[in-house]
Image (cartoon, rainbow, N blue to C red; front, side, top):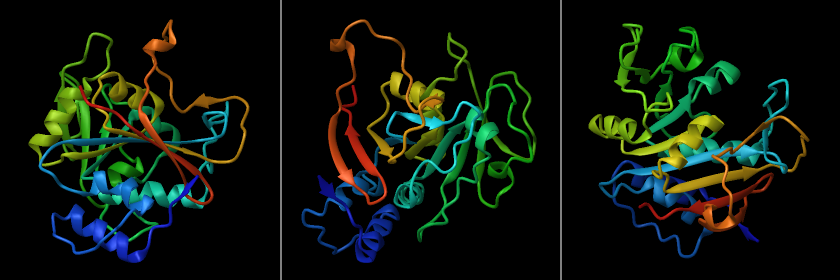
Length: 252
């Protein structure tokens, strides 16, 4: 299995790429560089990376909703690196209500991304940390729904199934200069982006514990035959405390 250990020099070069700066750093065949470079490098187009941290049996929480800690320390650092390299981090209302995440960068050097909270029907309380933390937050609501005047808001028409359209959201973020997007959760939000076929990379970070029951990390629409299954090009990388499945999709 490939082992990824990111040096301070490599991280500084990745942050330079994120800022659109040139770098003379030579990564060679460093597997850690290959994990982060696609999100860091600004090529003038959109890039979407979805991330889920889960147990060996594919759970992200117990039946009572306890979700911390699932990822080990290296998995947690990995998530904060992704946040630092993204223009925006997207989460759904269920994730915010359940976990009250801050969505800031604290474990590594680097900027915190713009926080984007998908909350079509106003479930997220106004005292949620992602709304009250310093920095920019964008609330995404359904057309016709009320929104707090103190929070920047995008209104989108609901799709036929009641969910907001992932493609329309990405277009609205691009209009605001937010092209490199991290979709952090929860499961319903990641499913929405995967089924819209807008995800370029999926990171499944697996921690060595077995929960046995509880919320699944990924839950897509049922299929009848394995020929319908998603088959991304995948590399397995040891981060230390966790194992990363780095899955690349060909965007249609």
